[in-house]
Length: 290
Length: 229
Ligand SMILES: Nc1ncnc2c1ncn2[C@@H]1O[C@H](COP(=O)(O)OP(=O)(O)OP(=O)(O)O)[C@@H](O)[C@H]1O
Ligand SMILES: [Mg+2]
Image (cartoon, rainbow over all chains, first blue to last red; front, side, top):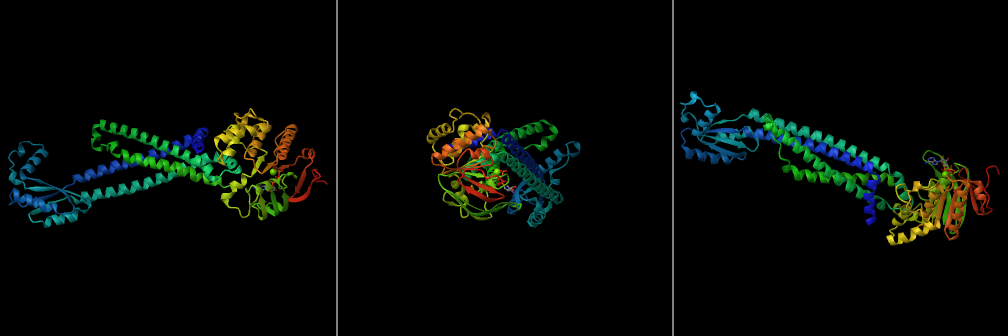
């Protein structure tokens, strides 16, 4: 048993170049796919952040006092699609308006009574904005609802396209990677077909021949996964730093790698091991048939 | 023990390699299998190691009936037959010692058994101090001795050699034959495929001659039956 383990590791050295090639191809595939996935991930977070900025405003009946207005809020919160309804008094609304318009004398005289109390509502799902707006209009004390549902629809479309495109591209990359990796492994095995034929000839069982390959696949897979992981980490951090250095790109801040670290590590580990073990055990099969 | 009963092998390409071959080789015998190139000698060897399946007929090797053998059983059958080839077929990146030891590892021998047995067979084939070399650091004759040592290491009932001297000069060839004869003297059945007439005639052994896939002579007269006769 110990012999078979040693044999697996030794094989990696004696067939050093092919092992190296297998590691390189696997690492390249993993890094390309994961870079792309992380890019998509950040993009979709960015889009949904933007989407969240698109809030619905519900104006409260002018005659209501503050206490009454706030009770409207609790009714708004009963709606399913409402995540958060923030009360903004007419005074606050006035201040905000002036601040937005850059202050200035022109607005000095504006009285807060020209504004209405309102709720700034963040929705769970902006694609259902129209329904929610209708529901809001039914609520007693709400006189007017302002929503930019065209914008919401636009964002929903962008999200859909983004999801579809990324799924398609990831599938293509995955297929290409599997093809490349399995060919590399086949090449590595082809290199050893004579050796395997000799082992068969002197009466080695398939299990005995396969075990070192299993070990080798395991080790190569782990190495590939680890190398790809740290490479990806480095790349991501590098990009993150570069982006945060540039002022105009402040909006595009990346999610810190630490946040996706575990997921990436687990995925890389699993994919690396699967590719290594499954790849080498599968591709040895046809050479065992003598 | 080898038993071929009316064995025919037609390759996928349609080549009839052997036709209606019947032969019986007892335990402890020494047999030459001779015949011109393309007559079907290697085909017979491949059939008896289950590398090929016969198109018709039945084959029995050391108690294993090959027409009913299960795939899982083939390795165990092969361990009863030590095979030697013209091109040695050693594992290039393993030392001489490891090449021979490999035969024992596959049967699950302990490292104590291996360190005891391998030097013994190395000594038997006259390579006592070559264990650490790699195959390509040996002469052809020496490599063939390593192959013989590997074939011997598990004490198989039988050794089958397909043109073991095809790549060697006459003196080396003769030495290899002498070695195989001495192995036979220790009780192992030996079957040697060759088309070297002179070499065969230096020994007085049973000779099975085949031509165009048929057995044309089988006798103890010890002479190579030439195509012309
Ligand atoms: N894999 C194969 N596919 C098709 N035909 C084959 C195959 N191997 C051998 N043959 C044919 O079968 C016949 C017997 O071949 P075989 O190798 O048994 O001859 P041999 O007696 O060993 O010859 P040699 O002395 O040259 O080694 C030949 O006609 C050969 O062309
Ligand atoms: Mg031949």
